[in-house]
Image (cartoon, rainbow, N blue to C red; front, side, top):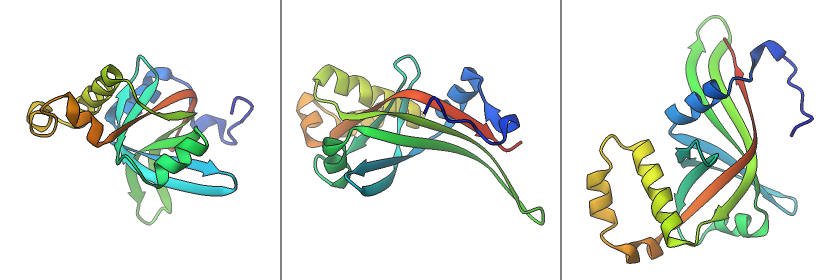
Length: 160
């Protein structure tokens, strides 16, 4: 989306630190997919790996999103920081980040472990008990899917 120009330039966020702040503080992303001429959108909790420019998601092994990803890895996602509707002003304050990239299924065990660690550390204050309860050994990683969205382009917008 390199040739996209935001209509209200004063609302555009170009600061990479501010974009990362929204992704660090966010808990879910809305991911849009398409295969042939059929759109699909899903909201997923995520883990953010700033250094790899990647969002990680967990999923069932089978389902609609897996089918879409297998047909077309190109996705668009957004994370929104909701700052609230301003009653009697017909205005909503927010910061949003939109990213474009490739979504894929992680198959390598070490990468799956990394993805799960990133997700749990991102979403949980104390990930230890959850990991101990749900992932007792490497075989457990075969019971669910881990996905990664490697973004190649990102933009942000703030209403205030």
